[in-house]
Image 1 (cartoon, one colour):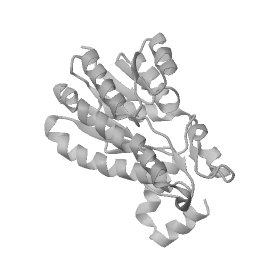
Image 2: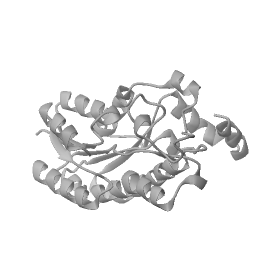
Image 3: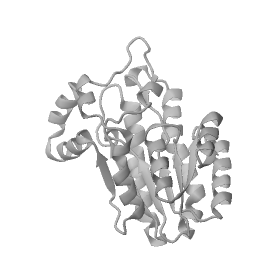
Image 4: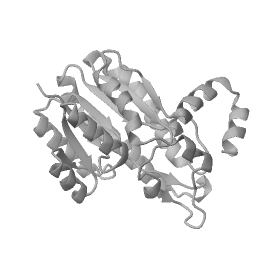
Length: 257
């Protein structure tokens, strides 16, 4: 029986690479995008297109209903990959900007996942994979809002993993460092005249979105999926440094990144 996987944020980058790879591996891929044109493009490429705006509760509900109908209420995998970044010093961010950051990156993901839990439980071996970030491990100046949303996703994933284990559902986190994608182009900058930019050295460690694919396959297919999958040298390094270094020393490194 063909297994179904829903991927959010499929218009480009990690989501698109994941959709293409899993389709080639024989999965029934439901590709969720925010814009109707992108949904139509995904359908033209042989995917089941899903219109989904994580910032809109009604859109999330409609998307979940469509997924349940298309999978006959039996979903093997949910790859929560959709999201965006709000960048800028915290002193320049409004409550509304923070709410939108969490609405898309966290609240929408929670709503979608909860609506699809029965379908994931019905599969008997459901997998939930969440795209976090190296900024779910550490925070840096100008990226506090985005990092906060990913820190929340990390804690939420840990609780969900323990709560759903008795239903056979495994929950994993993919934690990418710098990846070539349209993410940076779509960042909402709080200060247009002083945009937060990636440090020049980051380009030396940036990988294509396909770098996450071995991790995603393992999380979906292994009988023993890992809790966390760092991707890129930066993510691996920060995972180790956060464990080993005192806070003040890590702050000094990150302030000067």
